[in-house]
Structures are given as C-alpha cells and as structure tokens.
Length: 214
Image 1: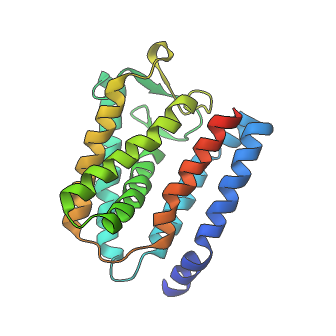
Image 2 (image 1 turned 135 degrees about the vertical axis):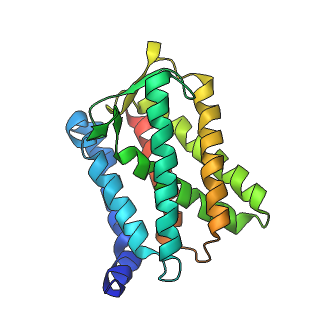
Image 3 (image 1 turned 60 degrees about the horizontal axis):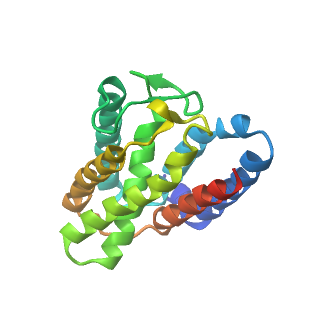
C-alpha cells in the first residue's frame, strides 16, 4: 500500500522541498515576512512526512521508533527549557510555529527528528566509529543552530530574554542532540535515504540565505 507513496517521495520529495524552500526565501525576504513565516509548521510537517515515506521498507519500523524517541526527547527538553530556563537559557516561543502545548509548539518535536536524522545519515557515511558519528552529528546540529538563532525572533519563532542568545543554548543543543544520536546508533538503521540526507544542506542554505537578505 505504501509502495507508490514511497516511490513518489523518493523520486520527487527533494524537488518538492527544494522548490518550497527556494520560494520561501524570496517571499519571506521580499514579500510578507510574517505571513509566509507562518507556514513553517506546514513546511516542517511536509518535510517529515516525505522523509518518513521515502525510507526503505526494511528501515521504516525502526525509523518510526527513532521519530518517537527524537520527538519525545526534543519536545520534553523544550518544555523544561521554557518552564525553568534550563538547559537552554531564558526564552519563550512566539506565534509562527503553530499549536502549542505547555507553551511549546508541537511541531518542535518534528524539527528535532528531521535534523537529527539528516545529520546522522551524513556522519554515518563519514565515520566508521559510532562515537564519532554521534559527536559530529550533534556538532552539525549546533552549527545549523548558529544560522537559525539570529533569525528566530524576526521570523516569529522564539525570543531570548534581553535579545541575547546565551552560550549555554549551544552547549545544551549539543548535549541533547548527542543523546538523540545515541538512539540512532543503537537502532542501527541500515539504509541511506537521499531525501533525508540532503534535507540538511537544503535547510542550511535556506537559513544562510535568509541571514544574508533579512
């Protein structure tokens, strides 16, 4: 039943996401920023759906477990962060990431999944040893966050107390990402998904261009 959807996602998914993100850069930068940034939850949901659909049939059950694990860890630590200021620092979510529970947009858990999976696929290609895979995948997620954070308030995503991004935010990103990558290694997914792997440079290019234009 899923085979036609899997073939569609594998063949056209990257093109679909590429067009959406390229279009998104221009309309956010040069048209109505707040209106189009408000489509971010839909964009993240579509990205995750295509990435899951494009996975091999053999890996799909394990990938489902990884989705639940990364979603849960990412979301719960964000709830902790917004309620207590630990471990990221004092911040709060704004209006453009959609429906919230416990003051955290639900789509944030999806974001942790797509970034963790994409970075894991790259480092699995680069390194043989699991520890190196985990370290460098977490580092890639932190590197991406450097391009996201300066735009977070402008895009209506989240805001920091005093408009200052604390250093512990990046340290916490690394620790949480490393913990999630541990589960990726333990699940031992065998197949590389081109769509999921190339999502990382796609989303990185998106935020790099927005940093240049905004």
